[in-house]
Length: 224
Image 1 (cartoon, rainbow, N blue to C red):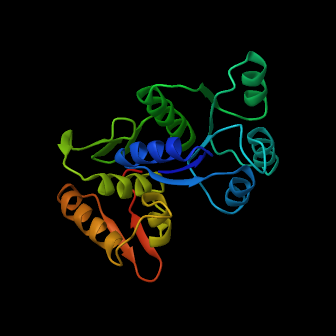
Image 2 (cartoon, rainbow, N blue to C red; image 1 turned 90 degrees about the vertical axis):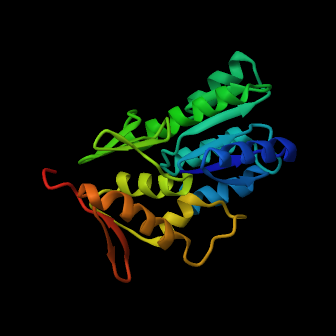
Image 3 (cartoon, one colour; image 1 turned 60 degrees about the vertical axis):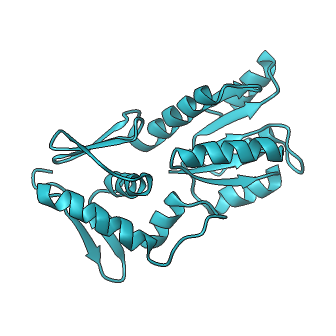
């Protein structure tokens, strides 16, 4: 899943990026409101972590513009502004949650999981596909009720394919969901992850098809 951090404090932004990437999120950072507004007008994210006191364009104004464009991306406001008026204004303008600085990292990560879960699957953390089940919150997969041993990247590919079950997903879409802008991506990385997933899923009848020139398709279960 892809997260955009909008934060002008480089130390905090770097710490959040490292922590969230360890949880297998693709994370990008922007340090000012105008840059974030430009990025969000042209690229898709699963969550925005937004500071309010930003240079060039205030966070609240940036949030107002995002919602005016009709974007429903979940926004977690993360700021030192802790008055009731600030909280109410941020939520009224379209923020989905509000966390004041300083904060505990486990709480932030729990809120991140909840907001992404709400945005991607209507509030449920469990995705199912025939014999395959994926707990997006706990980052665990099972096949026929047995734990499935997957790497973080393999889990990421599987989550994207399950969320788009029955639809073709191209390599660019998978890369965007798995990697941040500054992360190097091997030429055959996606093919490797898909190949590994196939070997683990096909014995239980879960099939990932390669559609030549288009991408990958997680075929719907026979009963779907």
